[in-house]
Length: 301
Length: 241
Image (cartoon, rainbow over all chains, first blue to last red; front, top):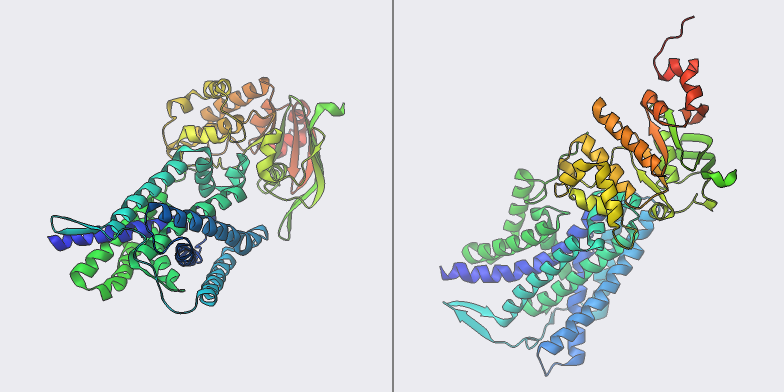
């Protein structure tokens, strides 16, 4: 029974990270019907930037203020990178009315540029994230061990998801995003500037990717230039499991996939967890191709 | 005289790839009028409306609204100029609720005008009853009402309506056409695209008949209703020869 709860805690930690990253995929897909393959690389870039900022501001001291500086600095840089990505890799294609496949190729190209750029800047070797960003205290509740990093990641992922949920559902711009995701032309007829909506979702998605990247660094404590593929792919699977294009779906899918992965690692073998991720993906695609929450209201003629 | 003309369309040509859908048409809508564009499927009616609201780029010609050249104004800016478009197929936001759909119609406004909201709900009381329902679960007629209600929230001076009768039961069509008249009486000029020529001619002040991208006949609806050509081709009456 201990294994169960321990793996649940581990799974919620990873799941929270997956969910944050998956939201970026799902929002971009929702509005642009594009899989932004470079999204995972923004996560890796965030981990590098976070590491760099941390090395500059304080390796000796730790504490919440340092973490806050690292988070805010990284978010700002990654949001800027995300906006540039949209401006350079996607907008020209959209303006030219290019087919969707071209945008996917552009996404793959942008991913390679980012990956190789990171390799040039920080080298091909694995970098170790410092362990003292958060206090290394752990709590033991009935034999289940929770580290401060896990607690921090689970709580703040939930907080960020809640904030996003409120923004999307309660604000005017959030409603505009939902409208543009349903029908871009009709949204324009309402006076919604779809380009502005797209910039907004890149800002939101990249911001969450930045947080996800820092969390990956804090939790796994290692950073390498092509790790974006690993986390990106898992988050992408999470977005599909939840129903791609569906925001609550990405949150649910991320957490479910994290917990699923943790249970496979705990009860089967950690080397099998990737394989099971894709078995789950295939299963979902066969039995529920629109994902868990990805239901569409039937269109009336 | 020119001050009277709200919308002026001049020699407009529109193409989809190599196929020219609209082949140089000119018409105008005056303040307070209901003008109908009639014609068969593929005559270019919808394309004409899409060109006016900026959804489709035009190749040649010009479109002016009150002395503003709006030919190359992007679609999302057209609504704040005063033109609102209830598009073909209704295009309501199915997974948003009815209220959210209506409020999106006022997206360009600083705040929601309660008076306007009450007026819109008084035109379509059914929508008020169903405010919290998802728009995709409404019946076809209610969806059409929602599309018109949504378009009215920006306080347009000019309303573009694309086939509001499409796929609706005759009784509902009547309701909707009565409301269009009421909207017009409130001072909104209407450009109406319709396949149902009889109804449109009864409602409108003037009409243009499109045939394969060109204006074939135009005039006051009174004249068109009595023209043998219109009667034979669009009203299904055989003339006695």
